[in-house]
Length: 84
Image (cartoon, rainbow, N blue to C red; front, side, top):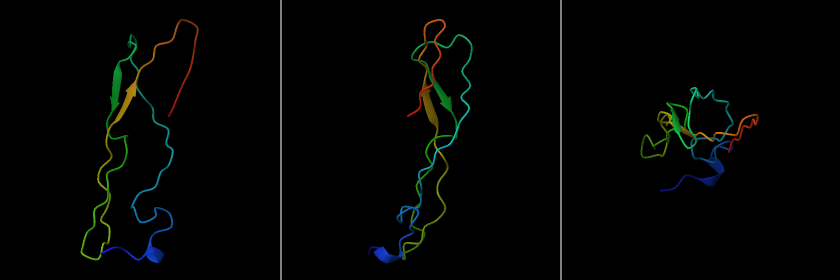
């Protein structure tokens, strides 16, 4: 069984999730080293929705995962922020 294409949600294309940008504050401690990984709990991608019944109706999405940030230490006097 597959859902009728004309009945799919126009925002998520029937996937139950949309992509959006969000600013997240990442706590970088003094003395953090190059290559160190910081885990920000609950700020990663949202969990996938699963079909709730045989008709394919979607249940609520699962909980968000964790965000992993790799520290890149710059030389004195340099500042930078990179997202991606």
